Structures are given as structure tokens and as C-alpha cells.
Length: 503
Figure 1 (cartoon, rainbow, N blue to C red):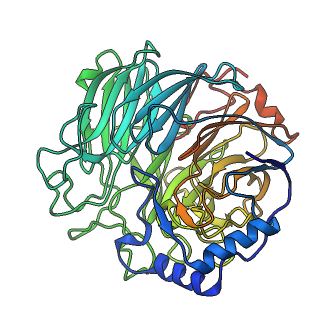
Figure 2 (cartoon, rainbow, N blue to C red; figure 1 turned 180 degrees about the vertical axis):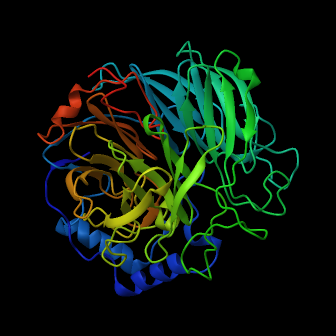
């Protein structure tokens, strides 16, 4: 593997005009296929045109993009290690942290790493429990795992079964991780339309789980339209086997079978129809949550965690195809929403798509109480253009805790990992990056960083195809974050970094 130290920003106009026109037509086509979110159980491979392949090879030969699989990064980033996949061969997904452990989701289950030495993480356990996406979070002795693929039962030995079958199961699985080397499966809760992602709201005796899911169908007995809300699960810490759904708050009230969310195409061409939420981020210290809900972004109050209340709702029917995830800044006066244009499987980080689509949208929160509003300020997208064989779009990231500044690290699939500053909401800028060259110069093979999070002085990334990466960031703008130490981190349950933890 070639290691290149470079701060060069690639600006080449990758891809021929005809290929660009075809991609734009695909991404803007009417109908629900516009932004099918997140890759499937196995990395997709799709041949590109001969012109696109030739362009990719030419860009590699000229040095405009890195060679296949080569590692490049800015001078302020060090790539400490990569731990390849082992027993779990499926798609790597999200990450959570507790003490000296990292928990890495995979469509085949989850893996636990001991990261006490970030330069040499050690595998503690690998749990086989198939069921995409296996979004993961932890709280105390409990681990929560999302299942969003129809299975014949709720066991870890289940097999795929059509969602049209009433007996099929999707939802939340709960594990006891008091012994990290031997996690025990202790409970399951079925939820309507499964659990694509989930977000925990931890309290002393209970953990509440907000379950995000979508895409109902009249042919699915357990996923009927309108599906215009989220499932709320209450988990008693001392008796997780008693976990149960306690509410299904409707976030998009409206008449008719589709509820009141964004109608999508053809009313709003190229925009996903809202039939639920993709992801929710909560900020418990401020009783706030931000929902990325397909065609809508929402802000809501979670003072009563069983009954979240919508405060404001926004749409972007010009540049956003699929509202994917959200991140608050520390002062809770900004939210970064991501747009997963192309569902994570398309090449959208190029000049043809441009800087405003498949990007982050930065919103200020103005006003007080129930009168708070989300006000758009700008877009942020990496300027390092990728080849037409590289799936690339805004994806999962976290704050880097620096007082007085808004800095975030974020995954961009094959666009790699970007560290960027949005202290000025209207003028975001990249300050560091890490990426690999394309997986292939001839095919679009789904890969790259799914999640990239900052935890106790290091950046950890879960690469769909390559495995678990550890990065060290040395920069005067982010160095103060190294003094912030956390005992637990679920990024979608944002901490108050400067009050909740020792630092």
C-alpha cells in the first residue's frame, strides 16, 4: 500500500459530459429510487462506461487522484493502523464507544475492540447476528442493535424472509455486555418497518430508544402506511427483558394515506418522499433532538422523552435529495444536516454534481423555546473530487470538542474522512483529511468510511470494505480536544462535552 503525504486539493473535472448527464438524470429521476439510503448486505459492483473508466485511469496516471487503494492524507493527520475484517464479512456500519472499548457494527453482527492502545487495537469479541444495518449503541451494561432487514425470527440464527410474510421480524435487539468478551443476547422488540437506525436517550433507571424506519407498503403486514412517526421503546436497565414500545409519536401529521411529510416526486422532483425518519440525534443536556427524515429536517423538544414534540420543520427541495443525519454544535445554536444523494452508492463528489448537492446543510437555530426556527446558512462539501468509480457523499460524523469553535469530523464513503470548521456558519472550511484511492478504476464498488468519530484524542473510522481505521490529528485548532475524556460515546446521543465528563 502506498502512503502519500499531501495537502493538495484535487480540482480536476472528473468524468465525461455524457456520463455526467446520465448520472444527473438517474439521481433526479422521479420516484422512490432517487435516494435508496445506505448500501446493501454486500458491497455493490457496477461497471462504469469505457469513457469513465478511461478517465479514472488517466486521472490516476496524472496524479490527480490517488492510485487504487493508495492512502493519502493532509500533513496534520497520521494513519496509525487499519484492522481488516475478520469473521464478519458483511458491510461495516456504525460505531459506539465505552471506556477502552469500541463497538463496530457490521451487517453480519458486531465486533468489539480494545482500543486502550489506539495504535494496536485488539479484537475482544465478534458476535454473529445477521440483520442490516446493525446500527449499534451502548449504555452501561447494555448494547442495542438495529435490524432493518426482514428475518424469519428475532434470533441471531435467523435467515432472510420476505416482508410480505406476517411472521417476519424486524426491530431492536438488546445484549448484555457486562462481560465484553462474552456478550449475551437478552431481549428483542419488534418495531413497525424495522429499525434502520436508532438513538438512545439514557436515564438513570431506563433507556429510551427512538427507532427510525421508513418505506412502508400496503403489502407489508408489519409496515403499513402512513408511517409518519417513530417508535419509542422503554428499556428498564435492571430488567431489559421487559422492554416494550411505549409510544409512536406522529411527527408529520396530515390527511390521507401518506401523512403530512414531504410528498417527494413528482411534486418535488429528485426529493425523497417522507415516510418516516432515517436518523435522529438527541442533545439530552438541552432537551433537544434533530431528525433527518428523508424529505424533511425537524427540530423537536424531548423534555418528556416518551412524548417528543416538534418545534420546527424545514425542507430543501432544490439541493437535498435525502435528509440522512444530523449533528448539533456544542452551544445548540446550529445543526448540520447531511444529504445522502444517490443513497451512498453513487459517485457524487465531482464537478458535475457540484458543491451544493450530496453535501451538508448548515442551519442556525434562532429564537427561544417553542418559537425556535432552523435558518439555512450554507452548504459544505469536500473539494477533493473523486473518480466516477468512487461512491462518495456526506455521511456520519461527530463533533471534535473544542471550546469556542465548531469543528466536525465526518465520513464521506470513498471520499474518506474530512475534518472541517463551521464556526462561521456561512463559511465552512476543511482543515484536515484522510482518504484512499478508488477500490477500482473500472467498477463502482461500494466502500469507504461509513462512520468517522472523534473519541478521547483519536479519530476512529469504520470502512465498509477495508475495516477499522485509527487516525491521529495534530493541529493547534483541534489539540484542546485531547484534554476532553469521555467514558461513553454514542454520537447520535450527543454529550455536553464540557459538563458531563472529566477533562
